[in-house]
Amino acid sequence: MSLRYAILGVLSSMPMTGYDMVRHFDESVGTFWPSSPAQIYQELRRMEADGLIAGSVAPRGQRAEKRIYDLTEGGRQTFKLLTLQPNAYPTERDGFRLQFCYFDLIPNEVARDHLDAHIAHSKLQVEQLRARIDGIRNRRSVLIQSRLNSRPPEMHEAILQFRIQALEAHVLRAQAEITWAKRAIKVFAHLESSKK
Amino acid sequence: MSLRYAILGVLSSMPMTGYDMVRHFDESVGTFWPSSPAQIYQELRRMEADGLIAGSVAPRGQRAEKRIYDLTEGGRQTFKLLTLQPNAYPTERDGFRLQFCYFDLIPNEVARDHLDAHIAHSKLQVEQLRARIDGIRNRRSVLIQSRLNSRPPEMHEAILQFRIQALEAHVLRAQAEITWAKRAIKVFAHLESSKK
DNA sequence: GTAGTCATGTAAGAGGTTACATGATTAG
DNA sequence: CTAATCATGTAACCTCTTACATGACTAC
Image (cartoon, rainbow over all chains, first blue to last red; front, side):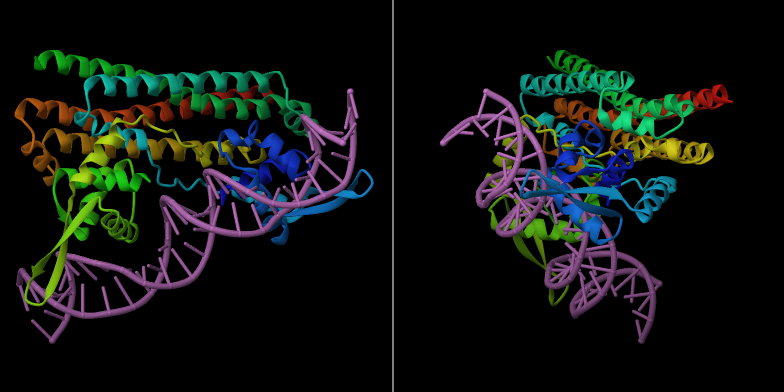
């Protein structure tokens, strides 16, 4: 149900076509709710059928057309309601940690490689997140600009801060992963040496 | 594909029926890969069809029967191979953070409530994780005992440590969440006061 | 004319959730 | 005999992933 929420979020910044949505998705809500063109187009159709959004057909060149979607009043209300509603935490899966439980079955060097890869993965995440935080601070992205333009200037800093803090949360998480992985490596180096 | 891995992991400790699997699931691999009876029974059937596990029919009382599943040689190999393989990080979704991005649309008190709930949620997680770590240290759980019994004593500490460190990872994550949420509350209290 | 972009989809399948269904066995 | 436990499923539905399909428009 939350792809729907993500799409409502994007359209609450500005109206756009499905194609635009696809293009802007990754660099906006996609950080927290990744999706694909196939799913986005489908969901847009369903949301229109449900009256949350309305598409107006606009000409494109001579013969072709495009559908520009915008929130309906009901869509806007639904979006606000969903934001007021407390979050329902879904069950989370962690394939890496599941695998980690059985690292006693594999050679120590391989286990070490896996942990190194985990650290590399987390460092990459931090980098990417920092780049996006920078993008928000400097108001690159048409979506953010459009959102700010529709709200009074005294709210701008708060709006930006919500985005930034959301990304900072993931930075903190990634850093916790790095801290943990390094500690795990030490723990097992110690076990290994005391065994011999 | 990783429910399959989780089931291989459980059966690598000891053979058991689907019913036993369901009972032990939550308190073992379920922490990292939650599942349901419906899914577990289905997957067991599929895995047997694929030759990863073999079920032997055992009598139960007078008329009834039960299937006791055990790893086949192929299943054991597959399990080890999957453990050797580097982890493929799937795309992650974070509904709470997605919602958080739009907290500028709701009253400050509601946003504050949401963050408080997030802290409460994380604190509960830490408690539950600590209880499970304690359970492993004290070797409650037939599964752990059985696993240890099948391996040489000098490996016992390492086996336990892999489980404990996996859980510790989630403890660190939950603590990072608490730290973040408290910081976010402060940031927005400050924004609120500077606005007036 | 042709390559890249704009624009919109369909179809198959994997995995997960929820709810319901069934019957034997054991302990009191 | 009755309730709890043991034991095993089926069915509908939703979401997500992957791969493929189609055609118009624009800049060169």
